[in-house]
Length: 183
Image 1 (cartoon, rainbow, N blue to C red):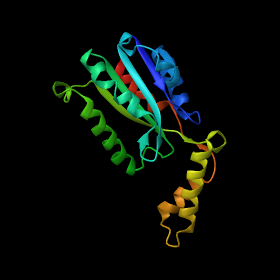
Image 2: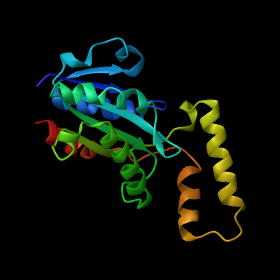
Image 3: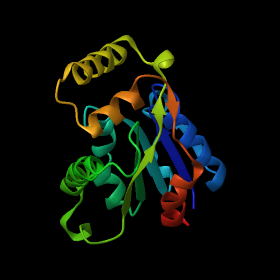
């Protein structure tokens, strides 16, 4: 099966997963900027990876617009989203359900119940050194807001400790659902 991975990565975690998947599937790998110029229909399956930002996946709209054509041409696709939260975070399911709704809206009616796609969350981390200015500012404001709260919960304290510095919770085991779906 000829597969391509298209990814958008700001701090390197999404790219790390893209490389792991590419190695495991022995498939093409391309950053989004270059992939915008190629014909995805030359592939049997397409994987899009992006990072979470404010409850959505970076540049997901670009890929969502490709879905009807991919499905019409019998292509499988995977979307993996990388974020700083551990996989056990219960709030992730709400965000992933919203993304799944966006995907399902793009699917032709006769494919809604077929296994044409997989949505996967992969925990990444934070690397403040590689964040752009806007992302750093947003995270510093969020951290300040959490710290200023006089009625902090244990969950708030966990969050403060986690996002106060760089960390990496990525692991190859999180690509298994993608590999199993495409093999």
